[in-house]
Image 1 (tube, helix red, strand yellow):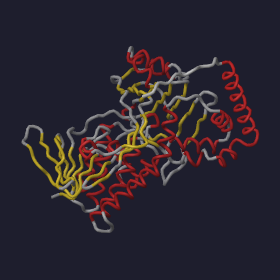
Image 2 (tube, rainbow, N blue to C red):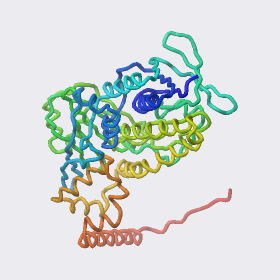
Image 3 (cartoon, rainbow, N blue to C red):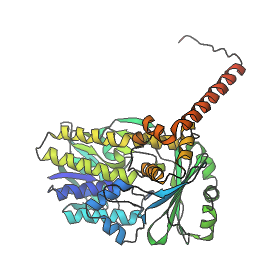
Image 4 (tube, one colour):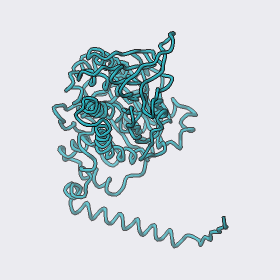
Length: 431
């Protein structure tokens, strides 16, 4: 009997296994993959995630593997260009973009070193139940026979299409249909000394240095243009990069080092992350559009929150369901502001008058630029940064008058459109 069985050993699962094993629990972590292996990912670890890796003694290994520390970023939404450094957060001041072949294998090894049993190439067929509680898993090793393993809790870290979530019928909320598609690839011979982000109408573009001297570029289009993008992926990717200053010219002067990866399967939802004998972590419990590159950061955060809850619940400090309820509360409280901010970006709505005035007001104010970049790196809450009080301080009276005039013009245009619209009659029929 294990204390915990974890299904999925990439970032969320391996981290949860490591943290539980470090606290003395008997842990079995399984994955159908073997490591190192790649997976779809934006690679980026935002500042809170970097701080966690540092606290757990793992950041040095990420850096030693040749992962560049990214301390500066260039944000170009169109009206102005904002360039600066990330604000310090819990002792770190850089984001990192390690390849998943590196990061996932590093975390799996850290889980093993902590004492967790990790079985690679292990397929879970179904959950085991008793009296409505999840009690374990039924699965099989590669080329081997079926086995049943029991645990006090089974944790699904098995992605947005989680077998655990399906098996327990975990409810979703804050759900939003896919808003964007994302495609990325890696280039060699491309000069890049900082992170770069561009907004160009209904296109978003990012470029980041990663391992082995490579640069990753990411382009995002609206979900309703998926067919158009798929009609010629390489041409459309390059045409999008051409919108981002000289980025297109730089990648064309280099060489594409790998194939183009991407997906339109980018849903957005929270799942209820616990129940009798089970819990969810990582994308299994919270899936968000990758446009803000939050996946790894959120997985590390939720792994720590869940590990604390499981240790408290199984150790008798408090009832397990109470501890897991606290995990859900803290996850949602922390994640919701950036979740909603991400959905706003992924909707590709044109900049509001407030946003245009804000961006222009930041020009030449380095400290405020750095704080804004801290929002993008999860070091500053968007709820706090965009509060009316903070905006008044940032943009001043002239900025508010500009916004008011823009809104009045908008109301006038809307009224004129209403006056010009023909009368429309609607017919109804009885049911």
